[in-house]
Image (cartoon, rainbow over all chains, first blue to last red; front, top):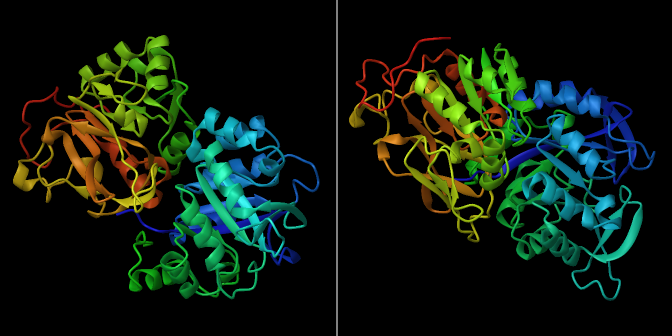
Length: 258
Length: 238
């Protein structure tokens, strides 16, 4: 039986893993390659590296870091932030990443999803989406898409965008709730479920995980295929195997971490 | 020397890096002479079977692979490399493939609890009826050498929409359940082994399988089991 995936997210800034609350107040946590290796050895199912400043600084992704990760990590990992075009995607994939994640770029130029899927296969293209609750009229799902690390509102409906991205060839959608991000109060279950029910590709829930029970909830009630965690593991509050044990105890199929 | 066959079907660096992690050196090559001279061959692949076959044919590598199999030296197919060793694939119409094993490939049917592609970690169970090396009743307790030390039911990483459908049940070394159905996730006959999952991205057990492959003689008999007569016996070259 296909297992639910536990994914650790490493936000990278100036070559260090960093973590902010609601995209602000960042603190440095360590070396991305070493941290990735440690999570891999602990039995995490997948890793995501976001170069969080690449877009804002208008520079390419740190490809040397991607290569270094590929030498140390033998599970799938995806890379996002700073992908500007098809050539950047190719470089990241050739460096050893399994998937590339596009966010702001895809909103500005949705056709990049189609191009990427055609060139490398749908399974390589992850749409990262930052969404926030809204009462703007016309956004029927009640969630609005943001870009540039949650700084810029786009006036686009989150569910409509998810459907469009999948139609273009996105192989997976990572749904990040700006409201829940960094709060450790649990995932945004409504948003996750809305997207999971709207598309036929796997959905990764992101933002708000603080305890293993939050993952149980997002798998059971949010319809997620994978859960992204950061703070709850970066600060050593929970280990990978402890989280998996709790998921298994709740009846959720997980990969043995030992 | 271990050679990873380069036929423009995806990223081969990951396979090479995984081999390095288990202390094995490998070269990536598209050169017929290098491939023919390999001690063991790794045949990876991502993407569509049709375009993979097109590339292989364009590069005139199909006969080189066929000759290699006939030498009895170990051969490992990965992902699309596990599909195009069959006679045909339903992908891109009915594409004629390499035909190293009888049978073809089929496509998964999407269901609410089975999103296609089948992507993620899934359990690999040793097939009770499979295996040419051991008798059917012993197969489960005497696994193929590439599974040495790997617990039955361990998870491996899959990304695929098509799966192999071998005609001879004895070619099925292991199976995986997806969407309420079981498919052949590891195939084997003689000196050939092929995994539908990505060995190089499958963590500790994937690395263990790669290491086992690098130690394997290529013999279709193991642990005293008697071969049923498919393929040449292993040459023992390492």
